[in-house]
Length: 214
Image (cartoon, rainbow, N blue to C red):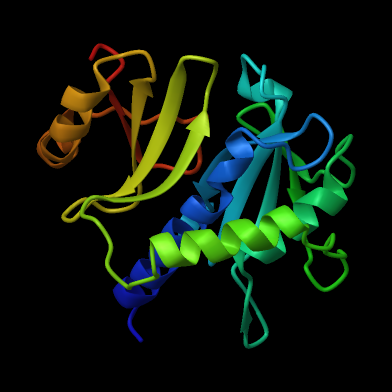
């Protein structure tokens, strides 16, 4: 498999995790800890980063970032593995290897972290989700394969855009004209690549589109 195909497979794996984790934007993983982001690991690494913290967070500095490999040996790491490990890990961060965008970064070894057992609600949700939206290997273009709530009103979206190297991010306001923005985003991402600035504080993307004015 060539490098481009490997990068595409990694981005698809990251994208596939997102809908399976989204319920934890509103339902806590444990205690008062909620999902606040799913980010592509830098450098096209075969890994995903998950940001968690209080639902009331007004800054990424209130969050903790956990990095999970997408493959261990010959086995893929699933969204349900990630949820189970996060429930075990949630609490004051320990073992951080540094900070990223103000968040402590913890590298997770699935071989040594126990998975909290699934709940009855987890199993019910999995059943209903599978029936409502059966899995198929189709992906959008641009491909959304990450997001991070920067505060209560702004979210950074991470895309793989055809013709642009690396990851392209877009900052949007959740209180803006979302219907119009959703329709316009593909052309904005594809047409304004040269005008986008880098955010050197964010290693997860090569450039950022400021769409907060929508």
